[in-house]
Length: 135
Image (cartoon, rainbow, N blue to C red; front, side, top):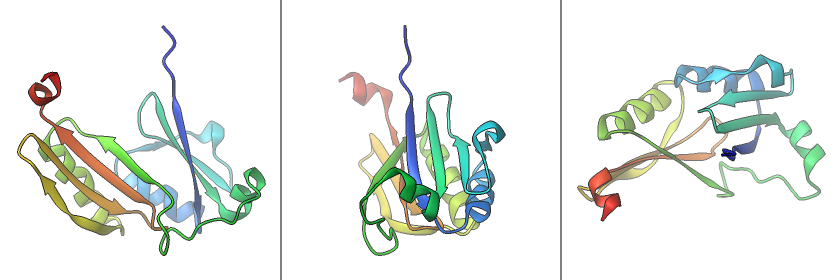
């Protein structure tokens, strides 16, 4: 069965700083698709973040590029396998220079936190109790 992938393309101010930030979170950079003006961040086998310099990002759109530190253009949500893994990833992001974007959400069966990366893009990290999902 074909496994569909997602490639999230995000404009960044400093590609090298963004590569460092995401590798500090434990992700890898695929050098095959990384150049001076873009970085291919491997989040999982099916999730890739393409971090493009604003100049390179502009090659793919005729729209004005949002300044994510002032405007919310996307909320990216990643699943986590446990509450502890939520905290671990968000804490790494904060230590690597990210900022907290809101208070934790804790409904008992669902727990999540969020951070903004170096360019202000919001990344949510959520855990949901598998028993709650099964209903």
